[in-house]
Length: 267
Image (tube, rainbow, N blue to C red):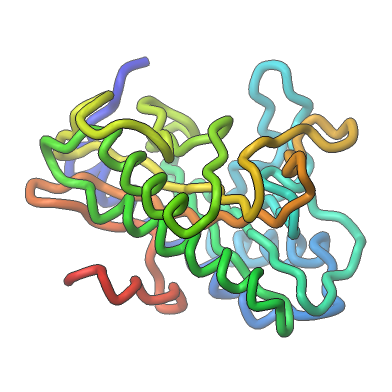
């Protein structure tokens, strides 16, 4: 399947789905504190989606070669890079956790994730979370017609590595619309001026995974999903879904509770 260009109706559908996904994270934010389990977070998200009239895109999701994903969202704690499955282990003070939500509304998919610092974390953990957030935005502000995907990847890589962190290569952003994963793949590293040229109406996620240590990752256990850092270092990720407009970009996964853009983002 090639890259899909969304028309005005499709863009409006994506705006609605993106906002609703972000509102699930707003709903969860005050609940994420020491003592809560990631399974409880998952249950709260399922309740929120039911009230919204959305459904989870992850529950039962089964790409080729994977077992069905068993939860309504992903919770990746500390050295878990992505696809962490909610469980009954309570979060403790100092943990960092990524909560990744994808909802479906009227056939359109909204996909976003945020990092949460549980209680008071170390300076190093908070710095990783902050730099990863800024790295995502360094990619977002590159988005406009005529730019190439390699420009986005290079902006993220250059910023993360200049701050002493590493960029995971095995997982990337992706086109999204009436399917969870569409073309193009959006790498978070790369060379300027390479890969696909951006055109108005393209919609894709930017979701860098940044490690405090080396970039190498591995599968954890035998659940078929959980990915961790090979060196046990902390990992962080943020994700927004972005529309290429005629003049630049529009972030589709913003809500009242979304963290504000960094100071370097204009407008």
